Image (cartoon, rainbow, N blue to C red; front, side):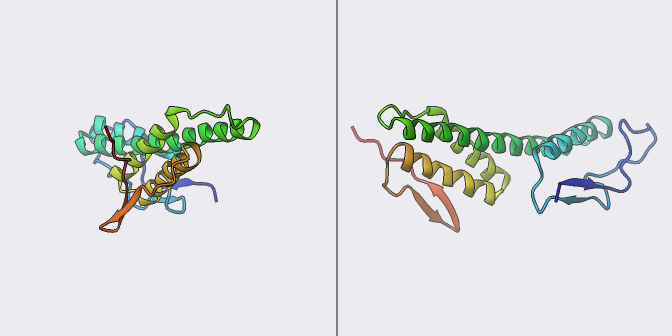
Amino acid sequence: MPSRLIARGVRPSPPAPDAAPVPWPPSGAIWETGGQMSVDERIERSRLLYEQALFESDAGALTAAERELDGVEADLAVARGRVIHGRFLEQRAEDPEQAREDPRELALFERAAELYRARGDVRGEAESLFWVGCCHQLVRRDNEPRFRCSGGRWSWRPRPTTR
């Protein structure tokens, strides 16, 4: 089912100077996304939150807008990391000796995990950590366990440095 916002009582911005503030999400708003907003919806929501902060002096709206954009950044990092990973797999299939790690891949997945964790998005964090593991196992051929669970949360344990 495509995602869409169904809202009652949303007025166009900017509001009239004497109009009462409309909280976000508006009363009666329903996000039909199966629990997850699309990138376009997050960007639109951040725009509306910006306008709410600007026209209604709601300072908290800017923080909420930044959180939405962090979700967009995390989604983009995972998507870009998967494309880079796909290129590595293509190279490996064509000529395994010439396949090289793109250093951006791991950094993108780790950044996504960090952003999802900060947002409290357990699903997104888990997906990012899955890709971190794929990068280590398939690209770096590092099969040593790196994840640990503490307090019900999985975290990444980097390889200890030796000198």
